[in-house]
Length: 349
Image (tube, rainbow, N blue to C red; front, side, top):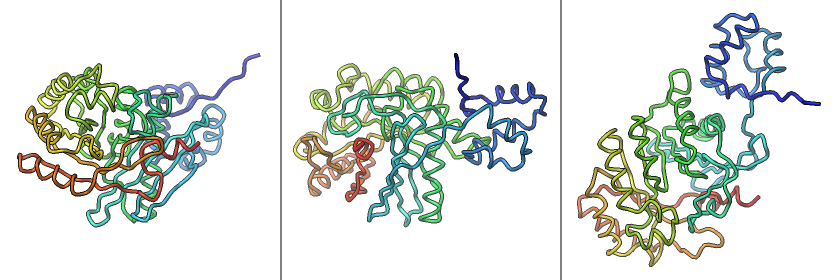
């Protein structure tokens, strides 16, 4: 005996949704109404769709489901950072982080793209989890919608920026990430500017080139963390197949094709990658295309041997790069009093 399983309505394209309404003898504009409820208003139930008749909402309920994220645990830091663990429809856990800078009216959400990760970076809590599955576009979209509500509730301001820097490697779920960005930026979706979105990758050269060929409009960040292959191989195994020369070639191609902003994310680890020799190596990598360096204070995790670099070493490192004419931002660690490092909260389960 087979059991019919309802399909998540958000897996349907607009054309597929329109075709379903026509099959039901409904007018085409009903599909547009439902599509707006799903992607502009972020509706998580059919009951919310108040411009539809009760009978039509009942029919939708009988035929489809909406696999919305559910808040599982929320942590509030004294610095304003809010970390949320979300439960997916199949019971798996992911996390998102709201990073507010009220004085600059900047409110950033860091979203996940996978349950777990397959790259095993030694400094990352998510790297200690196996990759279970990719998130579908709606599950990524939901993180933006729900964290935006947190920003409005706690700070009275909407999100201004989105970074794909949470759990998982975005370029290993390429199609789903780009579809989620389409829903976030489309006038039929949330209508955010792609220039306010940054996708961060540990470094998959062929997919970086594919981004360029697809003429994406969002920004790209490389999680660099070491400026020579020996050290990068030690902390990021993916570098063995995508070494720095190959990555710089791919990023140069991306820069020439898109003219989009590129940044290097560089976590400073005490006595590992924070010397002036390391800074000189990093400066050499900045000669290929316009790039900004984000030096990040490490948020230590259980089981990792790395410690955060001393403040004076970070300052000296940044000063060297600035004197080389490179744009540098030092990002101090946020959420130190909560499980704010990538994967920490989800890993606790």
